[in-house]
Amino acid sequence: MKFKRVLLKISGEALMGEGSYGISPEVIRFLSQEIQALYNLKIELGLVVGAGNIFRGVAGAASGMDRSSADNMGMLGTVMNSLAVQDGLESLGIPAKVMSAITMLNVCEPYERLKAIEHLERKRIVIFAAGTGNPYFTTDTAAVLRALEIKADVIMKATRVDGVYDRDPEKDPGAIRYHTLTFSTVLRDDLRIMDAAGISLARDNDLPIFVFNMTEPGNIVRAVIGEDVGTLITN
Image 1 (cartoon, rainbow, N blue to C red):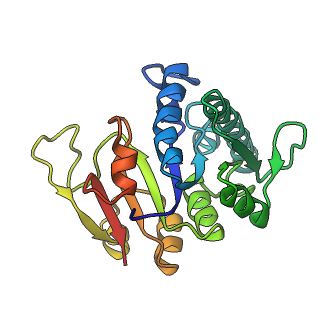
Image 2: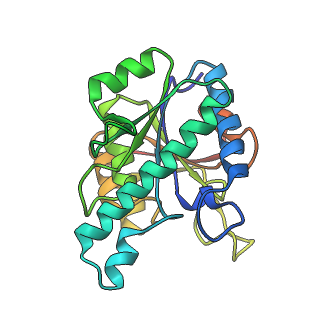
Image 3: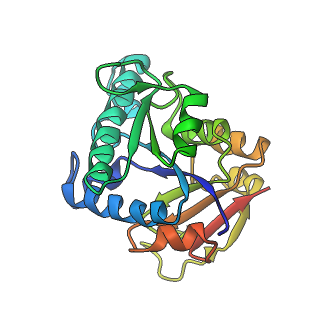
């Protein structure tokens, strides 16, 4: 087993499935089954889910909203998504805890680093909601921050394509996949795998990021056990 403790980053858009908005029950079911395979391998797993299927703070700010207010709305959207994922996991008998950077005691636990590590050690899946709890920080940066705090071995960045390419593979069938990349190359070439703040934080703390296609059944297990099904980004 290549990695023992993993932070999985999933975009909010991924939860829409074929829809244009909201949460697809079919996607939640598929995601929960994929995570169940990791759980059965006794992988300690944390999740960060975006909110692009509900509300994007940057988009709200672009349309005239105050950026802080818009980002707060986006963070609340991540809580909704996290609760949906928790429900999907628990329906399969997998213990899962949502921990939010914004305190809402009637809905989920407040985020506390040592408590999160305790959940992981007790083989519970921890879903980190509400980003960092601060505006102007994306869920990508929150994923790196939480991964560092729980001492994860790697961040698994779930996408629709099997890694990072030199060109858009959905538009150019001749695009070439990178098997490995350095953080410096990602920043220099503006490859937009994550926002620059998240990439810089991972680089400065030597935290690898693995980009892979989660829409392919079984890929998450292949990625975690070290198969070449994506792009590994390191120093």
